[in-house]
Length: 91
Image 1 (tube, helix red, strand yellow):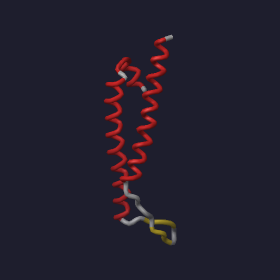
Image 2 (cartoon, rainbow, N blue to C red):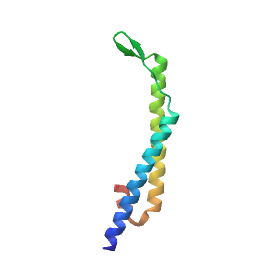
Image 3 (cartoon, rainbow, N blue to C red):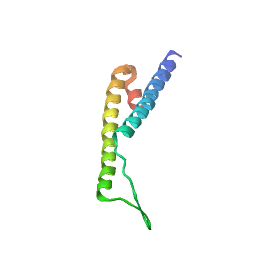
Image 4 (tube, rainbow, N blue to C red):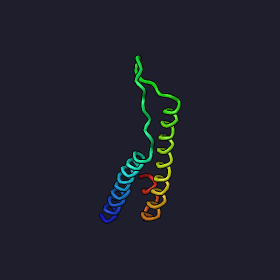
């Protein structure tokens, strides 16, 4: 019974920290990433090359924030929850 409680605690901590980290990374991306805008034309909307560059920069920020957050979360959670490294890795 004690083992299942420890596993449940590990699951809750790892998944809860991913939720908190995901929300934090989303807010950080929203603050840092530039927003591209469309120009209304007769047939719908269009983007200039500058706006396409801005949109690409937003994707770049998404990748950087996600990579750093994922790396930090992996290292910290594996170090902190080292009781069952296989379970932590699977989560």
